[in-house]
Image (cartoon, rainbow, N blue to C red; front, side, top):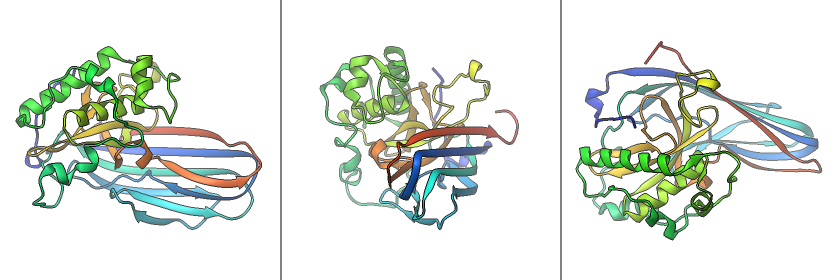
Length: 300
């Protein structure tokens, strides 16, 4: 388990520059007559990261529009109204990250009690239903803990999940409930994150789903040290009144630091899908995804 310490903005002088290239290719088998899509692949400026460059390109070329959704995520959306056999969406970004794990509350001042401010992150959601399984995981996380103890408790929760559940693609699918994760004893990063959300919310800790990318210094897949680094990654953010939102990667038993690029936030995976859309045509859709994360400024 990696030990981390509370670090604020004033202490987070160490920086890293990460470049992300995320390509999604859709094949229709037969020409699709039209397609309508929205894309969440663009990182955001936060207290722990700064976007240097970011672009999204679509082939066949079409007009890209952009808006912010309810959670503040950048959403590109477009329509393809002519026949096309394939669709390619490429997102490239360079992001400056910090070695800090917390930077204090990012939200605007709000006089409401935190239980009201973060109510949507305290209750069940589509992919995080209320389940008795959450009570099976013993952990010390509590909203009343001080900053140091809160971080240590999050690390302990990450250690328990990594110890008791295995990372195994194929046990679940993209629409699986956390119940499958508990019953099968494992899953992928989405499943670890949904389970962690349920556990934290049951403990009355506001918790939200984060999607993005993680850089693994062991770039050779045969020597990889971080699970899920070869694709879009998922983790959770837990809220603390002094620390703000703190990221925990339960798949890797690690607090979120400079190796992570945050893209989108929501109640669960349903709010942050990288690509969502519909098409009209007779063909069977197939999907190919590649993600590459590289560091531009040397070693850690």
